[in-house]
Length: 131
Length: 120
Image (cartoon, rainbow over all chains, first blue to last red; front, side):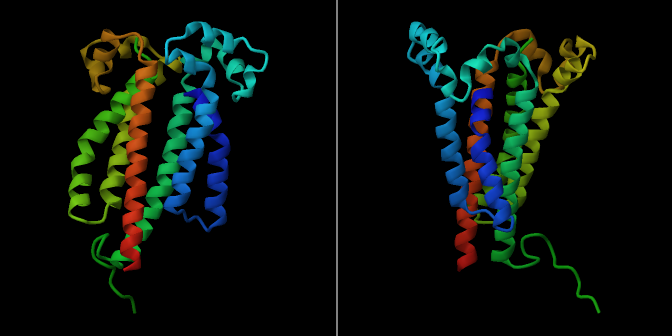
C-alpha cells in the first residue's frame, strides 16, 4: 500500500491543482485519467514485487538487491524499513487520500444533480421566498 | 492480532453492505444518487475507522485489552478477527482497494449519468 500511495502522490497533486484551477469543478474524464495514472504509477512502484505473483522468489530477491532498485519510486529504500508495514500512518494516509478524491467527486455529483433536477426537487422542498 | 488493514477493510465492507441497497434502488429508479452514495461513503469510512479504534488506542499507548474479549466485537468483530488470524495485511489491502474501486466507479458512472440529465 505504501508503494502505491507514494506513487500516487504526483497524480493526486496534479488532480487537485487542476480541480482548484477549474473553479473546484471536476469532469468524469479527469477522474478516469487520475485513476489510470495512479494505476500506472502504482504498478511501476511495485515492479520489484511482481515476481512473487508468478512464484519466482529468486528473481524477486534479485530485483530487490539491484543497484538501481530505487528507480521504482524508492521501492527498496522503503522496504529496508521493516517497521513501515506495521505503521498506522499509511492506512490513515490511504483513507485520507481516498476520502479527499471521493469527496471531490461526490460534491460534483451533488452539483450536477441539483442543476439537472432543479432547486428543491432533489434535496427536499425549496426554501420560502423572502421579502 | 490481525493487521490494521484487515480491520479497516472489515469495517468498510460492513458499512458498504449496510447502505448499498438504497444506492441500488436509486440507480434503478433513475433517482438522484448523491444522497444515498454520500451515506454509503460516510458509513464505509466511519465504520472502517471505528473498526480501527482498538489499534489506534494501543498505538497511542493505551491498553491492549481492547483487542480481546467478546465486547471487543463492538468494533466490527475486532475480537473475533484478532482471535482468528495474525495476518491480513495483503487481504485487507485487497479488500480496501476493491471497495475503493467500486465506490470510484460508481461515482464516475453517476457523474456521467447526471451530466446527461443536465444536458437534456
